[in-house]
Structure formats: structure tokens, C-alpha cells
Image (cartoon, rainbow, N blue to C red; front, top):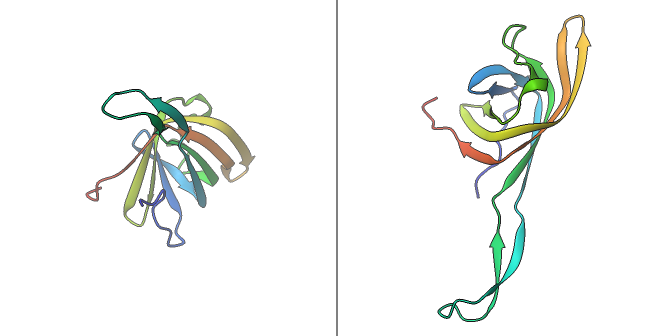
Length: 132
């Protein structure tokens, strides 16, 4: 079974949006869900009976304490739609594509902007090659 996230060593987790460095999070959780449904088999060679059909996995990510890498690096998160998000830690990376925000909670302080919680859904997940 593949890991949903890179293994954590207690370091900050780097976030890239659209392949460009965007910031860091202190914690990230991922839920993977795959719908299934029952279907009747009618093909003569398969015989009769029921078969379980599995749908494509969908991912729900929750990012906690997101800190932008700098004032000029930050994309306008409120405008993003159908984007890719890369999670990197300890030399490993996972790319989630087809991302869409479902919730953003932003805090503006004198020392910068923080996103306390960012939640999104993703349609696909791939591991980066180790050469990056």
C-alpha cells in the first residue's frame, strides 16, 4: 500500500502550487475515498452474478498553519480553481492535481498572512520522481 503523504520527520512541509514554491504548512491530513457500487453481470462468458465496481479515488486535503514563502510568491488562493498542489518533505513529493478549494480560513497579522485551515479536494495523486 502506498503512503498518502511523504513521511514526516518533524520539519515543515513545503507546498508548491502549479509547480512553483508557494509556502509551508505545519500539518497536513489526507483522506482518500473511492465509491463503489454493485452491478449485475450479463456477459455470457462471465456468467451471472453481481460484481463490485470501484470508482476513481478522490482526495480531501486539509492543510494547517499555511505560511506563504514570501509576499511576492503567494498566488491569490481565493482565485485558484483546477490547479495542482505538490507536497514535499524529506526529499519526497506527492502531486495532487485537479484541486479545488472548499474552505479557506485566513488570518492577517502585522507580521504576515496565515491560513489557519485550507481544505481542498483533488482528483488525482502521483508521486514525484526522486530526481527533483
